[in-house]
Structures are given as structure tokens and as C-alpha cells.
Image 1 (tube, rainbow, N blue to C red):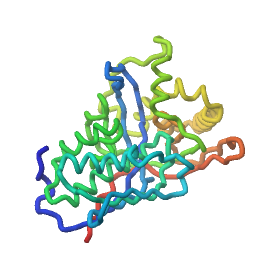
Image 2 (cartoon, one colour):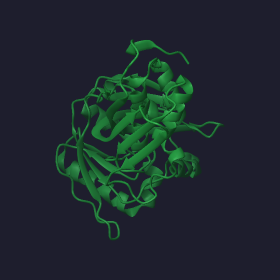
Image 3 (cartoon, rainbow, N blue to C red):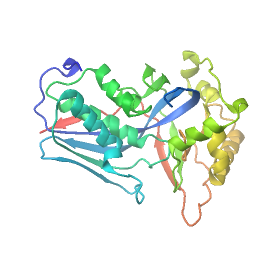
Image 4 (tube, one colour):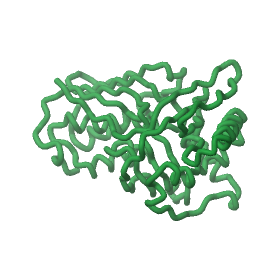
Length: 313
């Protein structure tokens, strides 16, 4: 891959840190399944202020990944080799021929398995951190190629833009001017929804229930009222009916917003679930508990900027 580009002089820094900001899909349509098994997407990505704290160091011996945080459930992270942040570092090292060794420290604040892109955001943060430290940084196009191979959310979460229209496998993007920051309420359930499983449910759905391509104009994405009018998530058709607490929360929040007559407010399933979110400048009714566990309510805001990388010795 070509190296050089925007960062100019070789870096002497050995530590980089940033916030791996979560994302929302303000609309999400799942289109054709390719012979490879991948699905074509059409989505509007929006970053949140909520994010994981990521630190990458290259002045170390060996390779390590350490994840902490109160959102981590038992066995929720899986083997290190499958962690997206680890895979991002391996991919960068293979492409750039640097570094041989690294340590990655992540403090998790984004719920795992909730459809908010926390793992993808961590991967994008690692790519950005390594590129900030690299003696010969990769060009943006090459960095995005690495991101694309890691998952459909990773290219956006590697890019320095808070709002983007994306299609294909998430690798084709149109960066958009950010919308004004809005309050976001997240209902985070004590269980996740596997993204591959959710795609499988879509594939099993009757043909009449599957979504087809649609036209979205850039003018539809210039205000919260217009965005609310096109807000949609194809995964809701197959995920919501399988989880009563998700269905009840979504119905309760939508009824509450309808009563307020706020055309710029809306509630949706986040990604493939399980999180439910509301973009609204008001408090939302608390969801019911799940068994013996309380549903975690997280208050955040949509982002108007991407947190940069800070590099130091």
C-alpha cells in the first residue's frame, strides 16, 4: 500500500489516545445479499458523544489488548484474536510493515452487542492512532481499505466526519454537514443481538417483507425534522417481534413522542439491536426491567465533531 500523505514528517511519538465514538444509524436499509454472503446497505451514520477511551502504545515488547469497563459482561468480548481492535492493529501492521509490537488499552463505555458500533469504533480508533504514530502514515484511502475489510461500520468510524450517507458494504460514503447536536436517550438491555443472526432473520423473512432500494435526497438530511420523516430500520421487522421488552419500549417511547407532536423527534432500534434510542429533547419513560436486571438508561448527544487523536512520547 502507498504510504506518506497527510501526516508529513515521521512521528517520534509512541503513545496515542482518542475517544472511539459510538454511532447511530438514522436510517438503515438492508438490500441484496451478494453471493459472498455480504449484504448491500443504504444508511445514514451519525456519531454520538458517547465513546470508549482508547490508548495505543508502540514503545513496548510484544502485543497486548486490555479491555475494562462496567459495560463488559462475562465472556462478552470473546477471544482476543477476534476482537476488532486487535484485528485492526494486525491489519495495519501487515499493510504498513510497522509496528511489530503494540499495546492497546480500552475503557469500554459503549454497551456491547447493542447495535451502537462500539467494537467498530474501537477498530477505527486503533487505525487512526497507529496512523498518527507511524513513521510513514498510510493515505486515507488505504486506511479506509483496511477498515472496510473489518466490517460495514468501521470505515465511517475511521473517517473524520460526524455524519455520512453510506452505501454498498459501508465503504462508499458521502460526508455531510453535521446536524445540530441533539439529546439522545439510550435504553440498553442486559443482552445483545448477534449481527450475523439478525441478518439471518432478514434472509428468512418472506419476500414481501424485504425492503427494496429507495431514493434519498441530500435535502432530506439537512434538518432533524426531515431526517425524522425518513427514519427507518429494516432490522426492526425481524428483531423487535422476538424481544417483548424491545417491542414494549419502542412502542412506549413512540407513543410518548407522538403525544408531544414534535416532528423532529423519533425513536428506533439501534443497528441490529438490542439498544433502543430516542432523539428527543425530553426525558423518556423508563423501560420495564428484564428479569432481575434493570435496563440501563444512558443520556448522550449527537456529535458535531470527531474527537481527534492526541499523540505523545
